[in-house]
Amino acid sequence: MGSGNGFYSAEEFNLDAKWLLDPKLLFVGPKIGEGAHAKVYEGKYKNQNVAIKVVDKGDTPEEIAKREGRFAREVEMLSRVQHRNLVKFIGACNKPVMVIVTELLLGGTLRKYLLSMRPRCLDMGVAIGFALDIARAMECLHSHGIIHRDLKPENLLLTADRKTVKLADFGLAREESLTEMMTAETGTYRWMAPELYSTVTLRHGEKKHYNHKVDAYSFAIVLWELIHNKLPFEGMSNLQAAYAAAFKNMRPSAENLPEDLALIVTSCWEEDANTRPNFSQIIQMLLHYLSTNSSPEPAIPVRIFTSKNAVLPPESPGTSTLMGVRDDSETSISQMENKQRSFFFCFYKCY
Image 1 (cartoon, rainbow, N blue to C red):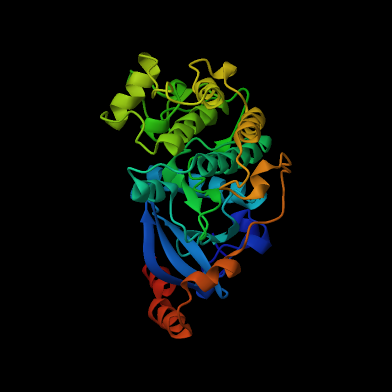
Image 2: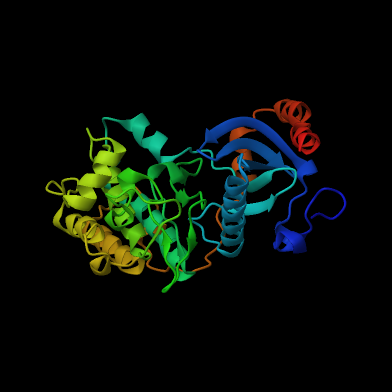
């Protein structure tokens, strides 16, 4: 299908017209990330600095259909959920290739930031502030009935000033259903909830029952990592870590944590998913920890101490705010635009 010009219309793409991008206005710069099924580039759209995620379409009909479905689901979720701790969605298009455009966060991934600090640890106030950002993003998703299913440091991005964390990559996110079964073994093993793992090799697309509490488990592992700045289950492969967590009930050590923090971490990674707290409770526990352990001059912004958590709070600083950090010269921008102007044209001609 198509509208005669090779592009899907908003109606055919099932996307509100305000989110449908004109690929001719996208200029693609250097690659800044790569996953199993997509590449992410720095670029510009209508004079905004943006991140451009180009989804590989796959080789077989089954693979193509699966990735198109995942792409459509990710776009639909991004377009209806907005929060200051979720990466801001700018738009998408699926011709000539599947593309998702979001704000560009120049602080990099939380994974890279933590690695750059080792063996030092984050200031505890900063670590808990980041944890609150993550918990608030998750609370927003869950309030919309969305499970992320792939919460890990690689999918958490920092603003340019490295004071705020935002959740990205909804590639594995899906709407929660009380009756429908969902695909097991999604996410990344080291951060994956035990109920998602099986000792028996799952048949393609095999389903299992689980709920939004899988994200609470992943959050516990991320929180442990924020505090210790060590790889959880160090010395184990990803599969070994998942097996140990699922079938030996093994967890990273919480012995050296303050009592309040130990309670948060251990309750979130409980084997019984039903006993894990929800993210509203997690936020309150983190705020209580901060209120009882804060110093006269906190190392994190004062906003961390507020308990207000509206589903749609004021928007995060847009890409225009971040542009000055990388705009060393107008010449470099025009050079990038000129050099990269043919990127989508190339794809359009090839496909």
